[in-house]
Image (cartoon, rainbow, N blue to C red; front, side, top):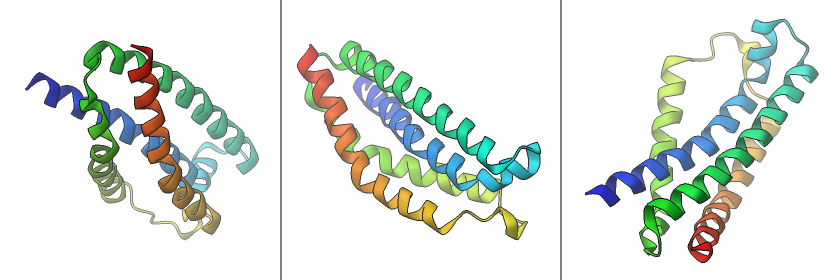
Length: 136
């Protein structure tokens, strides 16, 4: 039961790593309108926050996987379990914060970044799990 809880915590963290940049990129115009900053300034802030957070959480997850799972390969289930959490986070966000102002709709190229992320992110999760498994 403890491993079930741990793999779900890891999967939630992995879903958040993918969900937060998507949400930030999709809401650039909303952030610019609400904060009063220009779109370029908001983009710089968002990109730097994404990079710093991604690096910090990656290091934290490697240590967490090492500490919780040791040499067990159960953590490879996170390759599949992050996706339902991502769907739930996205649905809750779209219900709680709908786009009511048409100027806040994301740029069409944002969808291309999201699609590219969907193809690359499972490789990232696999490499994260493999690095954590090899380091032990």
